[in-house]
Image 1 (cartoon, rainbow, N blue to C red):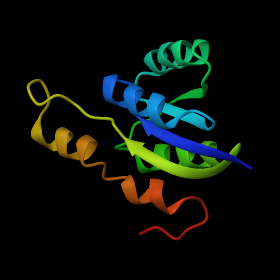
Image 2: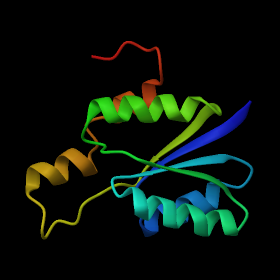
Image 3: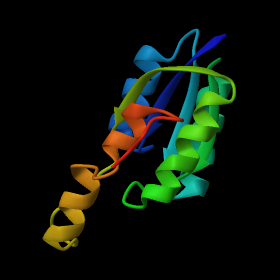
Image 4: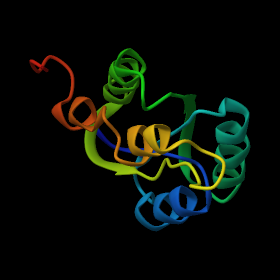
Length: 117
């Protein structure tokens, strides 16, 4: 079964980490902006990576559950990189904490079929 790396956030940090640890693995690249995730994924595919873009709102527990289900379809999750974030200047503090600290992180790490509270 294939190793799947889940990367949330397709900005420069997410891209750099995905390129560093992605060779030989399936990279599930998730971003709130699906078009951006697709564009970055295409660039990485052109460079030889196996990248699958998807859309996710990391502040929505249901969306994170769907991301986990998508990630386990092609293989086993062997890593999760939470690179999603919002810049501090235009965003309210509550949103920064929800995204940057990823309230849904336990859902990502627990995987499917695990009791979550």
